[in-house]
Length: 334
Image (cartoon, rainbow, N blue to C red; front, top):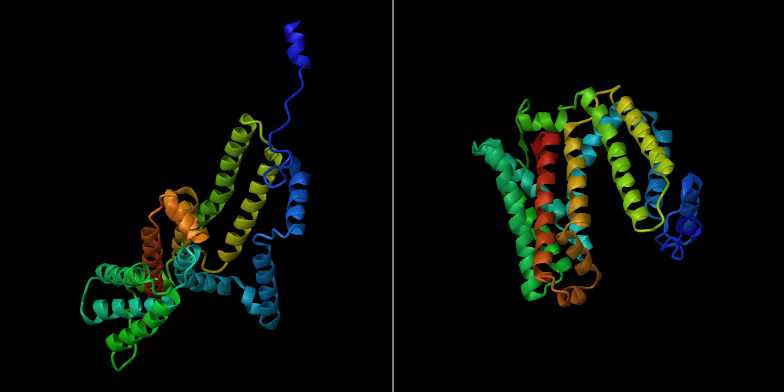
């Protein structure tokens, strides 16, 4: 009787089915319906960015068909890597509700420092890069000091820093206004010529799909163990396969030209590291808390001043490093 009773006992409902914000629909069709429900509710996510990029690419390709050629896309990967590194630092400052207007000046000053110390003063290139990034961190620490101790708005301090750092850049460059970096050096080769081997690029393109599948299956197992709704295994496999195929096709197309630059690989590595730090660490959660409500974060025991300082310092250091990459890309500091 007891065995029959157990078999006849109703299965308890999943605990999150009543909350449409957190439940997961089963099957691929359910995932598609959930996506359109989110769009109709105003949760667009990254959809506007994707649509905007498609429009921009379409317009540029109609003006110049070479825009979408593999060789031009490889050049764009080089160019976007330098700007992308600088943008990573800006993300940190924006997350805490502040702004840094001087990242362009800091990047230019860092490139000028590398040119001056390496070419004119004879420093080892690695030491010149470390010095430039360290000076960038010092500038960020100065912004943090003005913000934390004096209450100066970041808009004001970084606007003043923009002009001051630009003046320092012009001073160290001298009357010529530019310094050419040696062609054939490791730094310039990294910024212009160094490419991933084709097998390495194909292997790395498969990593996101594999990681997505493994983490997705673990999430499904944990949610089902907690009696929560979970996405279907078939949907996870389909998504991972589609993403892997798309990335492999992109890599195949780019390999028809020069391939994937190592500089772009460095940028992607920094993006992954920043994503992990902001979403999986105590520091990242503190950044979100301070940006959401500074007073509430302070009452929760978060060292608000330290979080602001880390945001400004990291932003300036990444801006300086982006300037170094830009100098490597252009083979000059100007």
